[in-house]
Length: 294
Image (cartoon, rainbow, N blue to C red):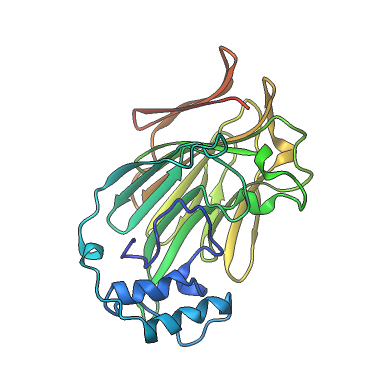
């Protein structure tokens, strides 16, 4: 649980929305109990109304305050999740970094089944009453862009995270999807600039600035669009790099507190190495690399 934003820190194996304060996530009613009522429940919510059945639990089940929610959480965590030994559920390696009001979590390897959120970042911004705060976020929702009927298991997500930076690659060895791409979703107040030449795309949203560096031997293009709830940046599958026998969409994502200098990034590369495809980057002297095959 990430108290500054009232969210569950990621990554998420399943999620219906980006911000639990804006839709009826059933789990937040149990958080309300576990936090002894210190969780904001809006008077009326429209999305996922069936999850409001949690109010029955709030009224009928005597769940008391859980003190472990008050315990400090380490700034860096690596979590190994072992699935059933049935040959179909590989071990998952999860990473999570917290820095004040910011949290970033990723999974090292995952398929692109819809509703999974393989990269999730949250941060706290100033906002209007009654909460006096607003949730900023960056969530990878590439799987939601896959056309209906496209086999999600043919697209894989890879990531390597070091603190507030993550190297990401989406890969497929099959025909590329007819639509969609690598999609990063931000709060609707986010604004993007840059991206010309070798400069990164810079996404500003209150207390955090996100830097997006395409990792490609060519020229990547991103499509931006917004609605009443979100701001989205998508690199379409039609611009994927062909490396070895894989189609690849890769980038480096770095989060920095607003007002701090941009990260020092170098050695961005995407190439084959001894039969595998490898993406690499260096951020403030730390090396990140991801190697993948299908």
